[in-house]
Every structure is written in C-alpha cells, then in structure tokens.
Length: 99
Image (cartoon, rainbow, N blue to C red):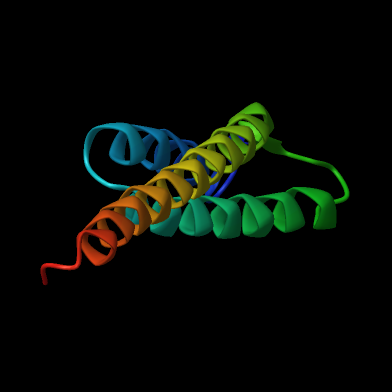
C-alpha cells in the first residue's frame, strides 16, 4: 500500500495550527488551519475516488481535520479576546477624557 497523498500534510498543518495559535499568534494558526482543512479535503477526495482503496494513512486525514478545526476554534477565541482587550483599552482611554 502506498501512502495517501496529502494525508501527512493535513496532519502536520493541523498540529501547526494549534501550536502557532497557542504560542505565537492567532492569525497564523487560522491560516494553517485553512491549509490543513484544504489538504484533508483533497486527500479524502483521492481516497474516496479510488475503487480499490490502495492507500494507507486515512486516519491521518481524519486526525488532521480534527486538529485543524481545534486550531481554528482556538484562533477564533484568541481573536475574540483580542477584540475585547483592545476595546476595553479604548473605552478606558476615551472615558478618561485625556487623549
């Protein structure tokens, strides 16, 4: 059996999306989440189009998709907290009256 094209990429980008969202910044995690989901979709289409299913590594596609969704969710939570944080700062500055 040969490895499923794009399966390891989907898993790698799913892991990167979580790691970059937690340790670096949210937007990079979201970008890698979308890339991971795209690779998972392509790999799944290849897997489903084959009649004999002579590919191995479909579990990497499923795991990569789940990790990409988790990374995307973390990036969205990070974005919401960032908006609230800067909104609170702006509200405090504007309420003090001293620009």
